[in-house]
Structure formats: structure tokens, C-alpha cells
Image (cartoon, rainbow, N blue to C red; front, side):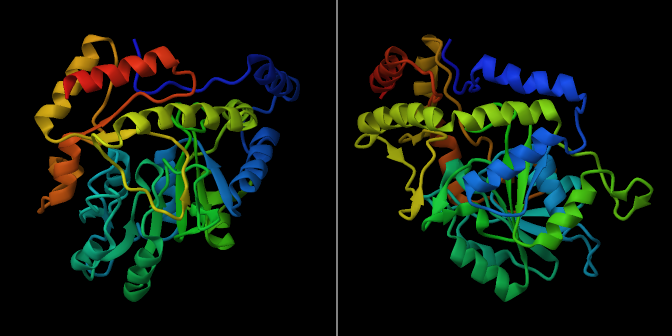
Length: 364
């Protein structure tokens, strides 16, 4: 079987060296030396400051919301946050979990990121934040979103789960917004098996979040915040350090697959229009077909050859009853029906790539 994604596993001997150190120190968690090392190395690699490691990407979102104060009770009733319906469910469910109502605005039909021109139309007196998503690692229109947020005094938390290592105009894309969150799930470009991180704009928000992820403790006998346990453990950090050591190899391999697909499909299918000012990370290869029927046909033909392609993201979240959306967003509805992500991972062999290309072409 050829899965749609496969975790990158680094050199086992190098991982064992880190694990041997864990056994020697017997420090398994609570901001151990490997977590500290990974924090410092990621800040340097990504070109950011105020990075906080957490145990998964969903908690990264939830802690960011709380640290920035958007989950507090609103004098106008339940708080709201404007986000995209074209994303993984965690973007919206993390808001709902913390008592913030997600309000959906439509995406741009070509970039598939939250359209800044659609945001302002759904701002209300209860709006507390904007939660855009750098979909498939493509940069949102960050300046325009920042302008809308400043006009209405809103926080901006970017779900940057797909955007590890992406730069915008020569600097880390993670520098934009009041915070940007990352997922280090096993299927991601960079992973710690499970894990995540938050990059804060302000150091004071980082310091508050540090206490929040450790039960709200400011010291052994001092509780300053309502907290949770969201710390990254040493085994997760060990995997992250090993994966980071091999990022150049991983990126080069993924780029090879991505460019083979692009060469084959750029004149036949709709590809995502990427921001011209970014460096891309080759995390995904999404394609949009002429109709939902065609997309499902291609998925079926690939499935007959044990190739898994997935509709990212279907259903759109404004169709999910739990979110009580009163609107249906045209472009999100349309793209989500016609999109497939093709298999992409570092050790995808040329023979498999050619099979996938052949089967897609046969089905068109």
C-alpha cells in the first residue's frame, strides 16, 4: 500500500544516543535538557524567539488562546473568533472546547487561505480574535489580516501547523500575528511523534504560557494561573532533535516528489497558487479536479492500486453541525469537494510516483 503520508524516521543509532542520555539522567519530562536543547535549536533554525514546546498541536492552539486572553468571558456574551472552514477540525474545535464560538469566513479561491476581504464582514461586538490557517504551508495575506485586526483591536493566532520552516519575504512566517502554532504530529514535515509549539510575539505572553502548560505553577508552592499539563517530554524531544538533524535530507527528498508531480499536472489540474514571497516546504501536494465526481473517480482508481489519496479538507467545517454555522462559504464548499492530496513523503520511490501519475492520468 502507498499511504498518503508516512512518518519520517531518522537514523536509529543517533536516536539511541539521545535515549541513552535519558536513561542515564532519569529526567523524563518537566522541561528536561533535551526539551531545552530542542527549544534553542528550533528558535535558531526557524529564526524566531519566544518558542514554547507543548505536547501536541491542538494544545498549542488552546494554550495560545488562553495566554492571549481570548477565552475569557466577554461582556457581550460568548466570545467569537473568525476562522476558515477549510482546515482540519482542530482549528475550530479547539476554540469551541474553550468556549469561543468559531465564525467562518470564506477562503480565496486560488490560494485556499482565509480571504482578508471576507473577514471584516463577520466582525461583531463579540469578536475576540482571528485564527487564519497557512493552508498546506501557503502564507496567508498577513499584512492585510494584520490591518483588519488592528482596526478592530483583535488578536491574531495563526494555525501554522503546515508551515514549518516557511519564510515570507526572507523572514520566518511564524513571526506574524500575536502567536503562531505548530503541530509536530508524526505525519508532519518535522515531528516529535506527537508534539507542537507556540511562537509568541511578546515575551510576557510566553512567560504566562510557560506556567499554564505546567498546571499554572510559578514555583513548587506557588500557583499563578489556571493551568493544564501540556509539556513535551524528553522522548518526544529526542525524536525532534534527530529529525531536525536530517531536515535537509528530508526536504530534498520531498522536493523531488513534489516537483515530479508538478511537472506532470501543472497544465492539467488546478494547483494551489502559492504566495510569491514565500519559500515553500513541500509538505503536501494538493490538486483540484474539474468536479467532485472526477475527484472521487481518481481516488477510486488509485485505491484499486492500493494508493491512498485524501480529500483535505472534507467536509468543510461550516457543514459540521457541532459548529452551528449559519452560513455556507462558496469557495470552501467548492474546493473541498474537488480536492485530493496525493501521497508525499521522503522515501516515496520513483516507481510509486510514476504509478500514481499514470493512474491519475488514466482516470481523467
